[in-house]
Amino acid sequence: MTVDDANAGGGPQSSAYPTPHHEVDHTAEPSDDPLAIRLEQLIIGADRRYTPFQAARTAGVSMELASRFWRAMGFADIGQAKALTEADVLALRRLAGLVEAGLLSEPMAVQVARSTGQTTARLAEWQIDSFLEGLTEPPEPGMTRTEVTYPLIELLLPELEEFLIYVWRRQLAAATGRVVQAADDEEMVDRRLAVGFADLVGFTRLTRRLEEEELGELVEAFETTCADLVAAHGGRLIKTLGDEVLYCADDAGTAAEIALRLIETLGHDETMPALRVGIAFGTVTTRMGDVFGTTVNLASRLTSIAPKDAVLVDGALAEELSRTGEAPVSETEAAEEAVRAAEEGREATTYRFALQPMWQRPVRGLGVVEPWLLSRRPT
Image (tube, rainbow, N blue to C red; front, side):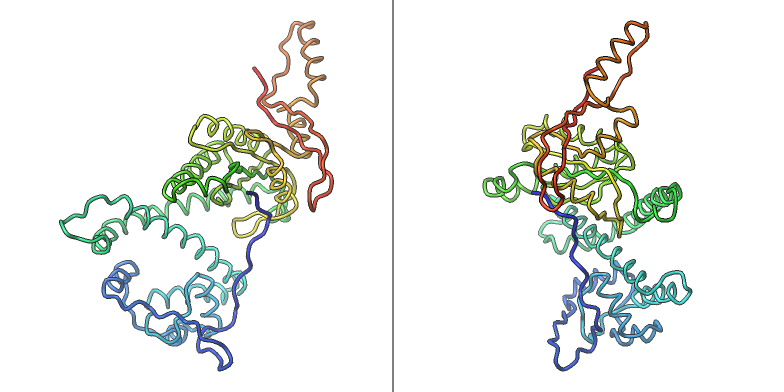
C-alpha cells in the first residue's frame, strides 16, 4: 500500500460549551469510576475542581479559545462537568500567555497544542499497552490487570517523565540545529530533501491469512527495524503506516544508504514479506513534523511501481548522487575511467552506488517519469 502526501484537516473550531440550540450536543461524560479518578489524580497531580467555564475564566482565556485549545490537544468536549484541574488552568494560561506576549500567533498556539496532543496521545497509548502486555504476573495473587495499573503507574511515572523531557530536549536540539544550518529563511519551511517510502509487498493478503496477534507482531517488527535503521544512518522517520514507513534525509546519499540497508536487512528475515522502496529528491514543505509536496507524492508513486526487494529513485536523486560522486554518471564512463586509471598507475574512483535507467512511464498525477534502479556497487 502507498499513500499520497495528504493529512486530514483539523476538526471544527466552534466553542465546545455550551452548544447552541440547533446543534447536537456530543459531549463525553468524564469517567466517574473510582479507580480511574484515582489514576487521574496520581498522573495529573491535582483534583477535579473546575467546569470548563470556570477553568477558562480562572485562566483569563475566552471560552472559544479554551475550547479550541482543548480540542486541539485531542480531548473530548465535556459540557459543564466539573472535571478540570489546576493543571488544566495552568496549561491554558501558558498558551494564552505566549499569544499575549507576541511569541506565538493564536493559530500557531493552536497548532502547538495539536502537534503536542497528537504526538503524546500515541505515545501514551503505546506505553500503557506495552506495560500492561508485558506484565505476566500481578504483584499479589488475585489482583486484576486494572488493579495492577495504579501501582505500576505510581512507580513508572517519575522516571518516564524525566526520560520524556530528556528525549524531547535532545530532539529539539537536533531540529534547531537543522534550522540554523538552513541556507536562508525560505529553506526553513521549503527545503530540498530526499524523501523515501518503504512498503511491504502483499500486506493486504497477509491480513487475511495471519491471526491478529501474528499480524501485530509483524508490523511491530517492521516498524522497529525501519525506525532503528533510519535513525542509525542519519535519516529522520516521519511516520509509520502499518505496512509502510516514510522517512527523509538531508542528502541523497544518506537516503540511498538507508533504502538499501532496509532491503538487505529485511531480506534476511524469513518472516518478512518482500520490500520495495521509492526515493525522490526535491523541494519539500515541512509542517508539524510531516512533509508535503510533489516530491513526497513522487516517492510514493515510485514505491508503487518498484520491483520486489528493489529501490527506485527519481532522476533528481540520481543526478544528485552523480554530482556528489557517490554514483557514476554512467557505467560506460565508469569503465572507461577505470581503464585510464590503470594505464596511469593510479586507483580508479570508487562509487558507493550503481544506477540503472529504467523505461520511462506515465505516473498518475505526475506525468511521465524516468525511474532509476538503485543498487550497491560491487567493491
